[in-house]
Length: 311
Image (cartoon, rainbow, N blue to C red):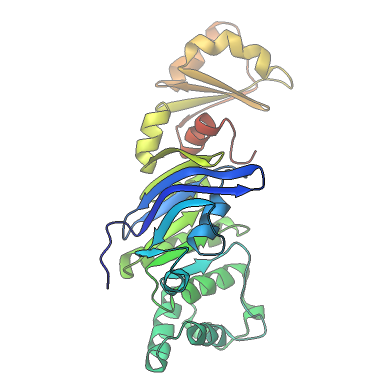
């Protein structure tokens, strides 16, 4: 097996759609064995990047290599080394879980003798071995997502792309998927490339993150590094009446390192949120609600892109 220093290596990647530029000279390195989070608002270029890395789109210029293979000139080799789990399910509901995996094994040329033990291994990993002979149409949404993860692992890829793996799932099921991903990281020699709109998910799962906006990377580092670099220790959330938040902002601007005005609240970025609130009340301001919390990746995202992820 070829040894590479970066499982994913991107240099100067550009993708144009007519006069619109989706990627503008992207450089990216993903180390072997890490969970690499990919964040950005809609239109930032995330989906375009993933399509190019998975050989589903061609770049306008620049290069990208996955598992040591060029995504343009060695597409078949790239595809043999990656697994994909998309936002929307691509399972056959009229087949059983086991039949879905066997069909995938045939497509990827998994040796016949290896199919049964490998299928049991990955289905046990995601807790579905006892449901292997049930039709997929009888699976819950969370079970289908777990089966897709098992299918993506069946041919032992070196890179697993998880594109919004928990979108639309309830909080309890999301937490279960996190547990399976963490187990996967511990048991499989694999690199995971994760996109998500859930900041808590990125903070829990990713070893490293990049934040994209308008086709370029605006920040990268571990979740903790990004929070320490781009935010304060605490955030005071303050809600005044309808239409009053913007008017109140100038009166509290000196109480924090930075003040963000959102439609429904003010965010005061400070090292001591309780002190900021005491000063605010001392000036005769009476917000409807207040909350002091630690800074999160959502705050980093807001500062870097000017938008919350919900926007």
